[in-house]
Length: 169
Image (cartoon, rainbow, N blue to C red; front, side, top):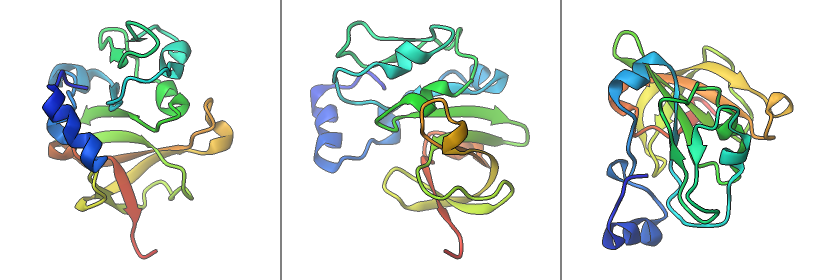
């Protein structure tokens, strides 16, 4: 989460939707090296499964009620935090070749097939582009009981796409 003013913070309280400018992506160079956790947790609440379960200590909280912070130097892109977050507020982002990126999202509906073309949605649930499913992790294989899927979309949508809609469903 970006360091935002109280007035900006009130925006998501009214709408329930974070804006792209409310979320800081890691440096582009880091995103080209490997997937990095992006935490979209705007509320200071007592919650720390991401910190407790990170195998390399890349996620830290100043105290139990603080907003989690990711140390991009330590993050290995394992996505355990995505699987463990009860608020479904953590995503993995990685820049891949050809101006594309992969985004791993928590997804608690029927998982699509790898290779399936999907509609990529923004935080409001609006279609912003077409993407492809590159990987899925079903609930029974998740270490946190949250299924995930990884999609490939144009890089320009790395900080915009946060969900999917399956086509022809």
